[in-house]
Length: 327
Image 1 (spheres, helix red, strand yellow):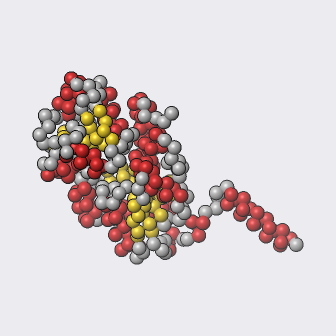
Image 2 (tube, helix red, strand yellow):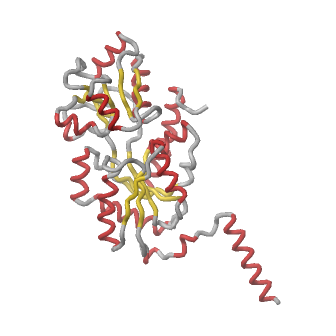
Image 3 (cartoon, helix red, strand yellow):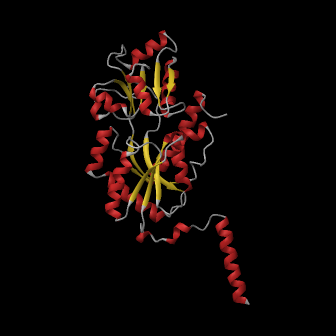
């Protein structure tokens, strides 16, 4: 009878622990044997772009290192929210991770309701790159510098148009902050994706466009970069100043990281982080970043978490000042 009561007590304790979220099925696998099955990397933007190709290169390296398949899945929609929600809802066992960046993790939750809490629903793994975003005009544009663009906006308020990937995007917030700093009004023309906004620029439908993918266009002479967002100049566009160099104390977070759902055991998260950092040190990966015009700036989980917290606070203040926060 005593044994039966003890057994019932153990069962009851486990039930309570599970209800409180203190027992994780992810702890069933020892870190030494991880991974024992395929890993999935969810990319929350479209295939072939600067958010998609770096994780694919990393997946190739992880397959060789772990001797397991690493599948990359594109789950697009909601400016990255759909894919990030899928990561948050995955089992916290290390077998599902995905791309984690400022647009869905910091900006979107301040604009509208999202199906996750970015502060508590994720396990940071590693930073794998930093975007740069040139502001570009057509080669025949009268704007030879960003100062020219500002002066035209001052002469003709609202007449200078620019395209981005959407309303409330980091690019949109950045341009509005620049306009506020200069006391001028640019007119935003939002699109649902970067390629559409770039096509609008190339077709002469907007005066300028701000997009990470425009670096390649600028390097081939298809457009002219006036300045770029980021802390460093692009090597391929060495004569193009950053906005910081022009004296603007305005910035948006441009890091690209990988994260998993909250609750991944620390040993497994570290094993993934170490392997991913190894992957980013390979020559093939560095060559890819150069081709994509992304900055080679990687970091471990602790730095990703610290950067997220600092940027979350800073972007919140900037968005409130500009009137972007959800009501």
